[in-house]
Length: 80
Image 1 (cartoon, helix red, strand yellow):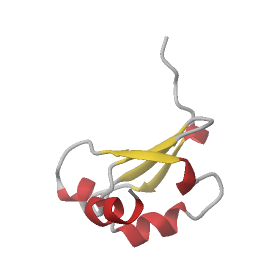
Image 2: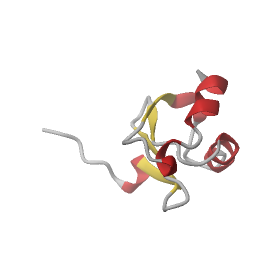
Image 3: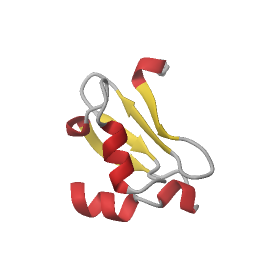
Image 4: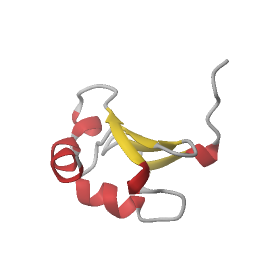
């Protein structure tokens, strides 16, 4: 059986035609799905309760449209 994500396990960092980025976590680890806004916005928006950059283990890119990949290059170079 798979695990269903609750609202507490996923948070929208950005959503829409200007950029998409979602934070998904379990008890120990987290990933981003897409990085469609600039790195500065990703990091600033992650600086709120319930979101931890230290838990981040990777970024899943759904597809290569700009609104899904805009920030990945700088984010990767800065945080990998």
